[in-house]
Image 1: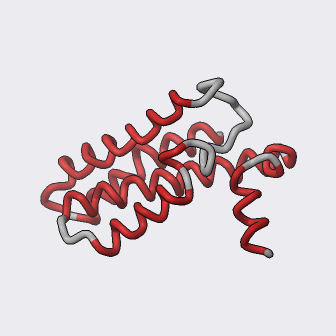
Image 2: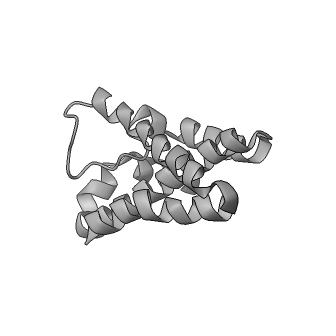
Amino acid sequence: MQTVLHYSLHFLAIGIIAYLYDKKNWKRNWLILIATMLVDLDHLLAVPIFAPNRCSIGFHPLHSEVAIATYILGIIFTKNKILRLIFIGLLFHMITDFIDCLWMFSKCSGCYENSEVFKWFKILRN
């Protein structure tokens, strides 16, 4: 079920975002949002490339806190509609991956304690 939710958010939910963003150009916008999934190319830099109990948020460079802050600032300050849509797609991708991490953490407490997300929350608490 986790995989179904994850990929439904990555492919279907972005169709809703594309439609709400601009009803006339929703098909083009949906393709743009699908293209933002290229952000996962940073997974190729990891060793191993795929680890089933690894949260991508905070681990991969384009999933880092700096990258996420950039996506948020891009949404706020970019005036170009297509560029803003790209930032929205990137941020929604991070939200989708974070939901996946939460699901994994609910099954594996050690996964949470070894994640970058845990380190972020630990810093925020102090």
